[in-house]
Length: 226
Image 1 (spheres, rainbow, N blue to C red):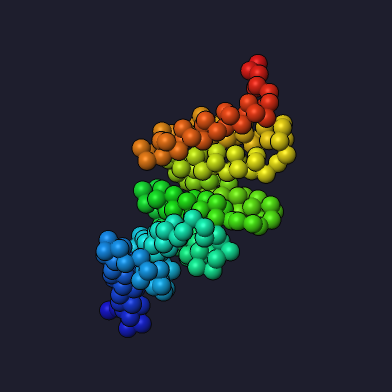
Image 2: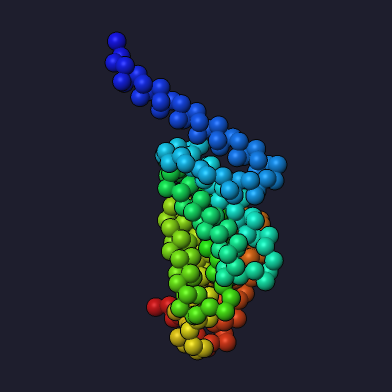
């Protein structure tokens, strides 16, 4: 006979799992309906290492990121609405990655992709701020891209965003050979990258063209093979 306390714990765990799945389904339905503002203000309390819980946080991250991207081009991170949306998106994706129980789950690719896009959007929305803050936000993108390459090496996301971040870091340095190391690292990442999905093919070509242009303009020496 199962002790009452143990039985209660089992039942509670079962209900929690059901609640997590129900929440995930509700949020997904709202996302399909385009109710992004409603999702963005939803308080997601689940912190279990389950697919459903991770997905709920990711769906909220998706909603906040979509709303952030829809903001006018003139809206910078200085704007409280933009800052709150990007904070919400970043928090959602980081929690989704932390709570996803399967390291090889296909969903991890989309979670990494959402985080990378969020950090890139935050960096690109910085306007009129000190170079030190630009560098700090770009470093966060570099680290996230490194994590993506390690966890999902078969995806081009970590390579493309990593290359983009290295090019950006190069532009924060004086013109000339001080920029060459980052530009070469970007070039290497693009060469090692798996084929990107169709929607990122143009972006890969753009970054590759930019890297080659910058290597020429900054007179970066060619790498000699021994």
